[in-house]
Length: 222
Length: 71
Image (tube, each protein chain N blue to C red):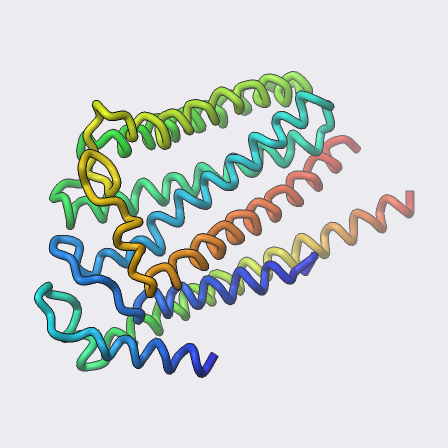
């Protein structure tokens, strides 16, 4: 394997997450019960998505600064992986909501915000597929990627935190923040490594996609 | 690793006196470990698959490098 120490770390940390995530003690809370353990899985999907989409934005900016085809490859492949993690976050969140809030989908600003953010990244995929000219596609999608990222940050990070907006999520609308549960030092012991593990996994999958795409472009240019 | 497992088991046992209903029954008859086992197997299966894809790509990259040199 290519430059693999962090891949071993990823395997180790994710294994630890699954084992400790199920067996470590958690705070006993009404409604949540054992589902509080979803913190190690559902919430980490969003962390991984945020990370990998930030990488994507970074390479889009780099492309606009200096049009290098490789930057376009990295930006596009990472945003596809980010979309996958976002969809997983949305589905797992929906399942969790069903058993704690009582509905698959609520009008929670975080849910709708996440859905809008994902739609703007779907549009990114559609936009890319709609253009044949490689340089034009790279430049336009790099510009669009900045817009999509701003939409994502606005709808996931800012909009649900507005004072006028009520949310069922912890830390919003008068609900206690997860940091309060996090104060349980046992949960921190799993949660922080879990974030690192899932982020590493998202980068691992992206790197495989990036290498595949590089080969594809090389063969295409022959 | 052993220390880690011991501490996990020790702390898992200390979850008692439940005002809130948790998966105590599953824990007391030990079956939660079956679920953890299944998940670890699935995770390992998927990660092993990822490693094999990684290696496959590595081989193709090598082929391409040789092709470039040969040209």
